[in-house]
Each structure stands twice: as structure tokens, then as C-alpha cells.
Amino acid sequence: MNQSRWSGRTVIGAGFGLLIVTFVIAASSGAYAISPSQLLGVFGDAWRGVDNPSPEHLVFFNIRLPRLLLGLAAGAGLGLSGALMQGLFRNPLADPGLIGISSGAALAAGVTIVLGAAFFPALPRTLGSWTLVTMAFGGGFVVTMLIYGLSQGAGGTRMALMLLAGIAVNALAGAGLGFLSVMATDEQLRSLQFWLLGSLGGARWSAVALVGAVVALALVAGMTLARPLNAIALGESQASLLGVDVERTKRRAVWVTAFAVGAVTATTGIIGFIGLIAPHGVRMLAGPDHRIVLPASALLGAALILAADTVARTAMAPAELPLGVLTAFIGAPMFLLMLRHFRGRM
Image (cartoon, rainbow, N blue to C red; front, side):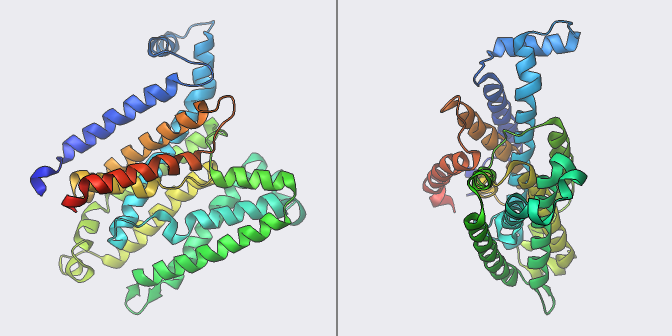
């Protein structure tokens, strides 16, 4: 079985190659097409610092590049977080949504959109355009803290309790969103639905800097968990005998996931399936070693987001399809194909 798997270097190299190809295609595609040769000219002009930039230069650097970089950071964060949760739960079907980050962020965003003007009128004056982002991030973080607290049992964090608490709290958040949808005006409902379906359309450099910084820190922190997660894969008792602080590893994995997914969801809305498909696909190719799974999942997640966003921008131009819908359309068939192709190796 091990001989049929790809080596770690091959998987990482393939991930980088796929990401570069996807980035070039995404950068070239859109309502204003930019050929690869023009794209090289754009970078050349930026390097030389021309006084009269071309239309391609303006479109790429002012509109397309922030969106691409936000998608890259978002996909990397979701892919990494999915790998951490699958390693923590020791289940390839685990997803960051199990610990309530997305549902908490969605509920907080719904409260802000529907009830914000009535109950939090001072927030827009204080936070400005960051009001919805801040509230969504805070909501996701608070719900994750709640689920983590409910999962504490005799001897520390119980993963079965965390799973059950996550199911209950996610259902409660869904009920809250349903109630808010009934109360919302038509304009508020459209805004809420647009946010829930996910999009990179609101990309701006400040959001790119925020998400990029958080995801970069999450990648660094996540890689420090690779060896402990490898030990936990053998069982918590065995990991403790090997000198791993299991409780500390669980806590760090949850908080790294909470910060990464919280930052992504707060700025892009809910983008599903990436945290499930990316690490699961990497595991089928390279095996369970988290030293490979974590970075490769980030690379594959980034490539998947860029591919989905390219389709979202171009399939029905000038209209834009919801990114969350596209990730499900792309991710679900890929997931089924991988299950069929690799079922003999699992």
C-alpha cells in the first residue's frame, strides 16, 4: 500500500504546480481577459514602474489581484483547518464546521444585518466597514469557545462530547438564522443570503492583509502540531506514552482552526467543502503523515478556491455565481471520484 502512495516531496511539488497553474488561469480569466503574455507584461511594467499603466495593469492590480490573494489565503486556511480537525478527530470525514465556527459567524452576521440598526446603532460609527467582519469573527469565536467548554469531561477534552455539542449548537444557530430570515426585510434577506453563500467579490487590500496574516500564523502554528497529531493517530493513550501533551495539542488545534476559519468566514462568508475535500484528497495520495498533509492541504485548498472563483466569475458573466455553491458543485464530484478511485487503498 505504501508503495502506491506518492512521496511527500511529490505531493508538495504537485500542490505548488497546481496552485501556480490555477493562479495563472484565474488571473487571465474574467470580464476583461488578460492573456498569459499580457500578464507577464503587466508584471514587467510593475517592476519597471511605468508612468502610464495599461488597462490590463489597472484591472489586474486594482481588481483581480486582491481577489486572487484573498482566495489563496482563504483556501489555504480552510484546507489547513480541515486537516487539523481530521487529525484531531481521527476521522477523514471531519470538517471545521464541527466546532461551530461557521455557524457562529453566520448567526452573528445575521444578527448584525437584520437587527444591527435597531440594537447596535453605534457599531457602524465605531467600526465602519469592518462591522460585519468583526461581528462575524466574534460570533464564530464565541460559539467555538462554547462548544469547547461543553466538551470538557473527566480527564480533559472529550472528542465525542465536542462532536455532540457541535451538532447541537450548529442546529441552534441554524434555527436562529431561520428566525432572522423571517424577521428580515427583502433587502436584509438578500444581504444575508449573499453572505451565507460566500463570495470573494468584496476583496480589498485590508481584508487580504488581515486574512493573509492570520492564515500565515495558523500555518506556522499548525505545522508545530504535525508530530503530536501523528502520535494521536495511534491513540491518545499511546500518544501520552510517547510524551505528547494530548490535552495541549487538542486545545491548540481547536484555537488555530478557530482563528483561521473565523478570519476567512468573516471576510468571505461561508465557503463549504474545502476543509473536507482538500485534506481527504491529500491523505489518499500521500498517507496520514501530518508533516505532509498539513501544508499540502493548504496548497490544494487554495487551488480549489481559485478554480471555483474563476468559474463563479466567468460562467454567467456579467452576473456572478455564489462561491459557496460552486465549491460544493466542484468539491462533491471530486470527492466521489476520489472515493471510487482510491477505495481499494483505504
